[in-house]
Image (cartoon, helix red, strand yellow):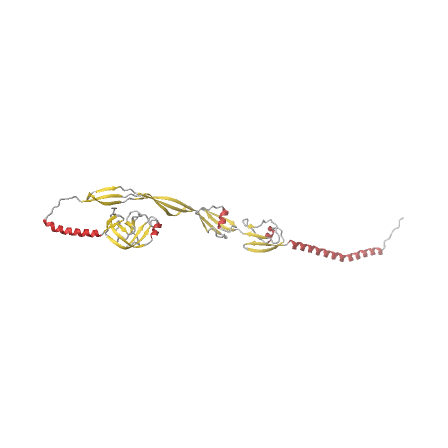
Length: 389
């Protein structure tokens, strides 16, 4: 038989007392250890947070902004700062790049511009700083004479409108026929009343070179860039007979006195005409009157509003045409101007009054170089141009 060990009330109570005592004795130690562990964990986390936080300098819209962040990637830092980028914006580093303490990130914001060229309007966002950069970015090629508004060096701003005007220049030729003139000259070998053509007339040809300017395909203006004589005109020369057929004189006694009076008058007229005879540039001529202290200017058909047709119906011709006051010099009459030569009164002008003459030149530059001259003497000859001796 076995021996049965009987547990008593005292032994059970003693065991419970020991467990309770151990529990209460070690509870304080456990609490202290837990607090220490939590403090160490927080300290480690704080150190990690401090070591992971960095300062980055963000340059945007011309301003520098320091940013403190614990993010390791640029994209996360921008999201943290609620910075939204357009696809056209430029960033100095890739969005998935790692950032370090002290990094500088440059962001160039794209602005909206509108470019009008070749009849089309193009809108885009750009970070270019000048108008020239925007045009190059669009791949638009500028020609030599094209105009850009605003100018290429202008700064690009938001909502800027850039306009490119295509300029085309076209050189054309205009052929002008210069009609010949009929010059009548006296011939003492021909009987009075007879005429003879000594030289046939031929018209001349002048070629005007004209530059036409088009803007975006539309004609806007033109100007004369040159004139050349293709063929000289040849005036028609007509000889007018002045020879008087000799007749036997019939002298009557009753007419002797009248003839004496007539001879006296003729001698007076001849003497008067002999006083008005001059020889200039190898030409002998008789003038009707003399104009003293005549002021002179010059004009050209290249001036705006000046055509090639004169007031008398002829074409303006350099070396011949002058504008006069018809009350002083009759239309169609020839004159001799000291220092200039023979000219014909063919034109008038609103500013041509009194002793004033406007000399015609084909070239506007030559007309301007002529300037204003005064104190000239002008001999008024008549409707027939004097001929060389």
